Length: 257
Image (cartoon, rainbow, N blue to C red):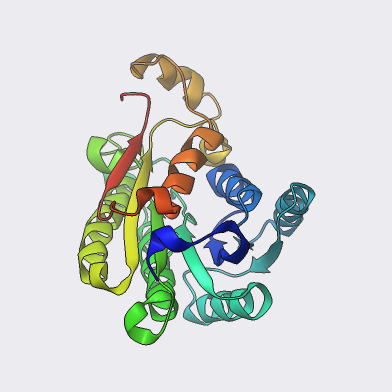
């Protein structure tokens, strides 16, 4: 089925990983409000994830919360199985789950931090994409669909002095996006990435820099941080039939930074 043929009544499910807060929660709410049944995945924030589910249901949508660590293959398999048994055929995956590993210069970064950042940000995204392709590919009897990976402008800017390890993981996501997009282009699956710039979320405080947004805003040409909702709009477009000829693209949402 051509992506443009989906109508609202038969939209397939969308899995959003790491959707209990920040950009993931904003994406889940927006996608849910536009008629997609949503699997709100979370690793730890169960209460927050259930709140996102309630917000989607209140907007007239369908949603369930599914606990799972994307770095665990068993958890990934369970996330996909639960989604399809409870919400129906899959139409989209938003690979949003990610960690920064906190602030550290490269000379001070711990091996365990590097390992965990790569496990969640790269291995997790690839495992989720693998299962999404298996379930959506026309070649395997699926209905087609779209994958949106959440990258970061740090991939291009380098994360210097703050989190080069995190930026490196997002550089890998950009390469993965382009490669997978070309691999499955004839199978009804589009693969794109959104690269947010400075966005107001709890990410900064959790990394140990609550004043980061304020401090960095003057470096953005628009002179302000973006919102999670502004990023979610780009993700929604890439998931939708409106982006039917867009694949292998990295959409930067960063106020010109």
